[in-house]
Figure 1 (tube, rainbow, N blue to C red):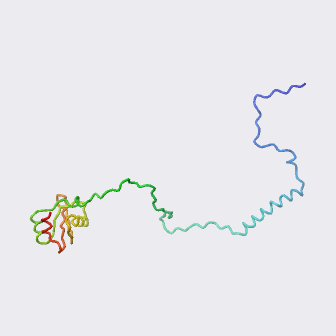
Figure 2: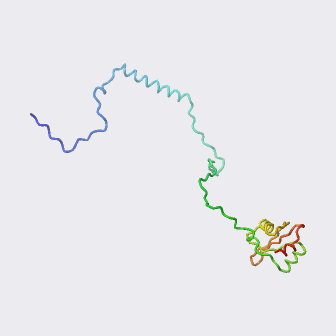
Figure 3: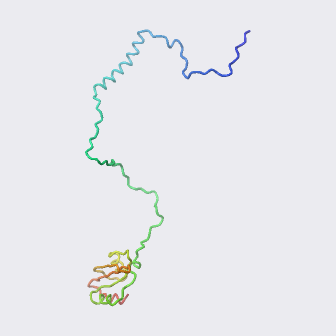
Length: 176
């Protein structure tokens, strides 16, 4: 009885490629080799012929006539919010009571009321002529023909509200 040689402490490194049998590597006979290459060769030949027949054109480079480059236009989608960004609607801060602060009652203002059918008010600095016109219409139920404004040296805005012929400024001033 012979003893088996002792196993080495570390295993031998194996190559990743599987071992092939010697029969697979044996040379083929000429006839079989010719048949195999003719099958694959006809496909290759067809592919090459197709490439030769169709002209291979290089991509034409665009000629730029302008030195400025503009980004290409891409798809811009309309906003489609999934929830409101504000939980409560904001209220209008410029209401009629903030626009018209007080009437002016100086002698020159009284003269305008009597002679040219015009009311004089101190108004908010941010109020526009249209805002003033609308506020006067809502508060005093009169129709304005025209509104002139100026900013006084003390920084307050003064509005001259010309009323239409249908309304008398003196009657409105007495109501105020």
